[in-house]
Length: 263
Image (cartoon, rainbow, N blue to C red; front, side, top):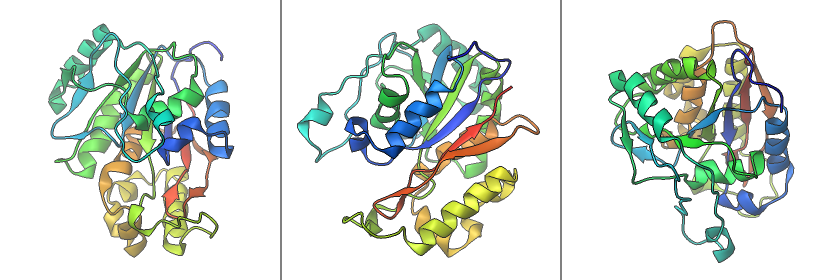
């Protein structure tokens, strides 16, 4: 990893199943490759689909716990510990800076699987401080994009903004055989979103329900989509975006990753 640049890149990762934490596949290897090409962050601010709350909160513990916030998976998955430190001082600073959004520090959360299932591959040494920022379920998409804009200066301080979710995330229509091509509507929406990201058409991505039936099927609830808006909101004017990883798991879960270039 190189020295910290004037502006840290930002990432959105389609995290897929928690089992990816234990897997070696093209997605998990892709996450490792993405991290290896990044400058070393001062800290990581993760916006995970799985901290979906009423209100906007930051984790503030010096040692955040590893949360096993899932059921029905092998016991070995629940034994994984991602022992990254937190940063209480940074959390307090960010809460002050995000006060217009009603942000507060909380000590009753930690690093959930939306974050650590990716970070175990990106930063397996768990030696970079990790904070999480919650997603206020009561707010419209524009709120989350605007909050992302407020995160832009953090990137100039060496902080990696990491959104973790999925552009397409429909658990009701999974292909459990994982042997078929992605659903037509899923591939259509994933491709449409990627094209609009690359063209900097953020307004259309904020108003994603207007993108039609494929959007409604791909985003039956907004929790996994909204982390993308935080990352896009943090984009500097004219900053390039790329799609370093794409594909599907189980037919209706997008694994697409998005990278903002940094400077």
